[in-house]
Image 1 (cartoon, rainbow, N blue to C red):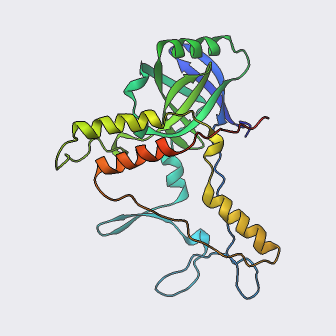
Image 2: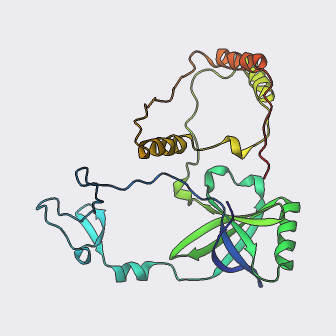
Image 3: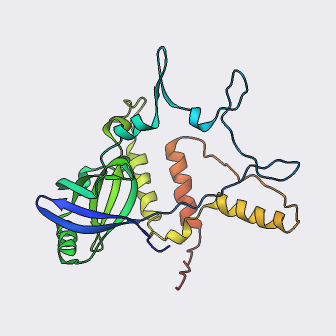
Length: 264
């Protein structure tokens, strides 16, 4: 998938301004269905309906409402527009910290941040960040929504990843109960990790559900009636030590698998 520019602005670091473009780093490929009338096979439309009277409510008569103890607080479009953040083309960088200080639970969606025009200062910043192993914290407004993000450097380029707010991230897990791990379990876990050592090949990670649905659609479109089988959901039972031992034994018995790489 080729990256596509979706927004442009400037990255601000103190008095420095770097013109940049924002690119989609990921693109979701879900299967989308249309809702049809089963008799006529024609698409049906959703309408706003009063649940008490079953009468259709015109869109211009509908309002956004927030539930409170005594009912709802209503908002019209003009009020919501005034509450929206002020439009801007600036990405404000507030500071840097070591990259390992930010856990993956904070990250939402990544974007590529490329240079727009003169690129010398852009690549100087990317190289310096990568050499120092730091990330930057940034804030910006895009399409009437305010974002906080982490600025990182990879392979000489910058990436900007949106972040969850503090009240959306669990700060701690419940205290564990029961016994602690044994020395045998710790050793088995280390051996299992070593046995499964591998390289990341993105071609091995596909959306199997989407592929099954698309294949089913293709067959039905040709007039076939394919048989459906539910995917197996086998679960390991027993204690951790036994499960790890079984997994390790299966890895040792399995023949080495040669990976086939696709050549572009």
